[in-house]
Length: 352
Length: 264
Ligand SMILES: Nc1ncnc2c1ncn2[C@@H]1O[C@H](COP(=O)(O)OP(=O)(O)O)[C@@H](O)[C@H]1O
Ligand SMILES: [Mg+2]
Image (cartoon, rainbow over all chains, first blue to last red; front, top):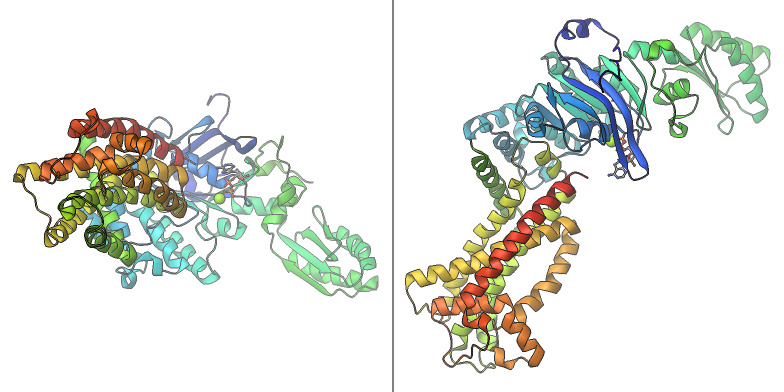
């Protein structure tokens, strides 16, 4: 099989270059998972070099969780192969589990146990032994700022604390490969920031991290490489910079007062856009990818003035997930057909 | 560690966790410890006068033992259904532990609980006049049989819990099945009092034979009890056969269902 699927080149960054010499921490080829008529994952390839961070980026229902569950032995793929830390996930799941730490989309903690009891139990089930399990539980509680809550049952924890406890559970055995499924979904902005800082510190220690997210910002902040998936297929891959270059650095967004002004605004933005315009008629909003931020905005405002339009709102913003999808597929994220959309490296470009 | 060693070690971790959980849920704790006392007192004093059996209290205590440990076996099912709903099963599944330990540990913690409950019931029974009239060894065998039967049923309940997946629905179902199972027996009234077909069912109901075997081992069989069927004449053997068959069928079924359910 591996002959049929040549290794997809992952764009190297400085940190990945050295790691590439050793075998990758995670390698998946042609993973497929079907649920009846639904093909949740339709042939995903990915490679995570040891010591790097890969973000699997995609909207709700893209197949992120299913992919991660196959890689962590919780699901058996219908097709394809995968190795984690050099071990085949289908042939030797127990050995894979020894080498990974998983924190799923929903916190896997026992609500009726205390924080300490949760981690101690996980240590025992990793077969660390009684003494080491206890030590490790305290270490992690300290590291995750949960010492004060260590003797309270997890039921009383806030969402952020549960998430941290769950993540601590994934780290009990100091696994070489860490897999996190949407580690910040559902967290308030502050907890999210805390989590990002924590993860950044962690990967500094050389752990390989595979995480999934719906947020480009999160992928950008944490990951060396990003794989964008939708409808179970890889639609782009590369570093955050490469993806952003592809979707255009910035967006100019103009909201006009009347329906009649929309067409005029479209005409003006056409002159500066480097890619396809996004026109939302009901909201009377027109968005254009541009290259050189503020200058272009000034230019747009001038031109709008010349044709007699005073916009309700005009501004610059960074690309969002929707922009990535719009650029990569020509459709908003929730309309992507994905049926015969081949995976392609970001560098090749999709839109002029 | 050997494979069996791993299963035992992991199961004891899970069992310990289940016991801890019980102490964290006061309702469950109180219900588990108080209800056996209540049952002994209620049945002993309320029905005692109405039912025509010499020394009714001595007759009924082994019956209450049986009913209570059988209800104890349902904790496995409710507990596993609860676990399946919560995220913790994902953690267990992603650990390099023996996967069978989740069920083995579950059923084991039920036994521990049933031992505690049996001690409480026995003490209450002694207070109201129940006596063991045989040897210590006989009594141990009697208790072991009760616990073993409940253990086998734990696996049935485990399978049901995995299939049903919601603790509330599971509890409703067990309520509807355990009451007939334990009442259409000789546990609370002599078998002669049942009308025709119901009597046959009661005679072959393994709970009847379990109770009969326990009464024999404790020396609590009322004089003149008719043992009309092979099942009752060989109550211990017949009950053991049921235990073996239940375990042989439901241990593999529950284990397979756990793998399946967790893989969803
Ligand atoms: N157990 C399942 N049964 C049926 N369909 C499923 C199941 N799990 C996931 N799916 C479907 O597979 C697709 C991908 O789901 P998922 O991997 O959870 O996506 P994501 O994690 O990216 O939100 C969705 O369309 C989802 O409805
Ligand atoms: Mg998901």
